Length: 195
Image (cartoon, rainbow, N blue to C red; front, side, top):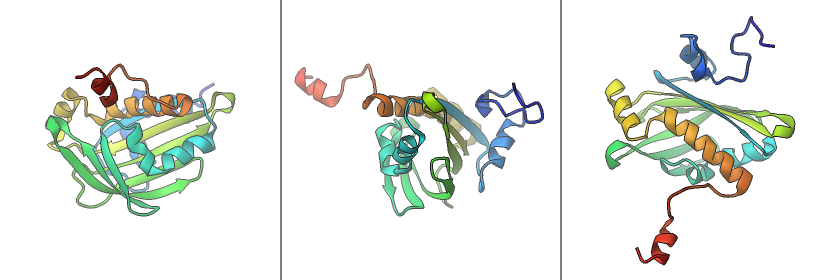
């Protein structure tokens, strides 16, 4: 039964909330939340929480399932440099800093000053018993060019709300099966077919 004193006590992602305060709730969960736009996605992965957390916490693993991430340069345990695809074939970059974390529970971050896309977020890992681990990603961001940039990003399938859902689905596939299902041919298949 839902806790009526806390309307967000259920498993529903914040972005499905009918409450207009959902983005403010998300920002309130981030120690250094920055960004006016909001994305949230949740997936259950059939693996133990320690394994899921460890794979995600090694930021060098993230480009393996995050479709738009070109690369992440891990600078130290707290800082990393991100290069991400943008609409129109360009890229955006930022330095990110882990602001808070608890092993096997959550990781929170914020982008540093001068980011092409100011952002912050938190990924929560919750033990779901026999079902595995519930992973919830909450991201706040300021799209380049404001609302126009957000619309263009959505048209090119580069909008963070779309990507968060897709990336968590790929993360689930990778951890549960060891690979990411795709209808597309990889470069080796093109080569084998002489294309």
